Length: 240
Image 1 (tube, one colour):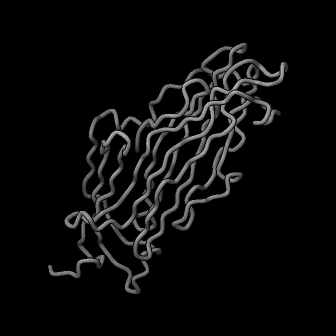
Image 2 (cartoon, one colour; image 1 turned 180 degrees about the horizontal axis):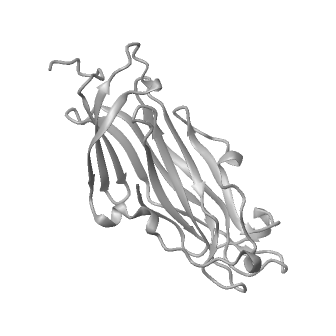
């Protein structure tokens, strides 16, 4: 079938790729076939596609939701996540308002400014992109982001339980490109905090899921998982 090089068409194969950029490792590929194209060419309303192939680099990469959390005792530690969900990409653009895109993992009824001696940290850069199966340099959607913030912070007031907390946690969108009239949105979801330490030496930990949604991939959401820990900082944990 002879098709214009840069026109999405029925029968075309598109590949969604998820990778760890920092370590140069591709973790997963999903291949979709375009079943139907909107007559008006408005891809933001969605293409009709079907998943025809899925390849994981390792079995471990697929085990996203089996991450082990420590046991939490909210009554003893009173840990609080100040924001459980937020958008960090909206209508193809990174959300730049730090107040809307930042959370904290601290003691309830305290303020991030009540903590001191924090360290800055970040996860590896993770990339989600979609390209044509045959013309691999034809990239339709491309975004790179990472989880970053401050951790290892200790209380500056004696009435706050000793430990190492996270006054600031947010996603940094390093790069974003969305071609044609497609639409990319992404939001973060945070789990309830766990205390991996003790009531006298608190070590909070949360899982954070970054969920990327491309309007035309049959509403399929691609999820990147991260772990934020008050002592160890931020790390990438896998894709789903």
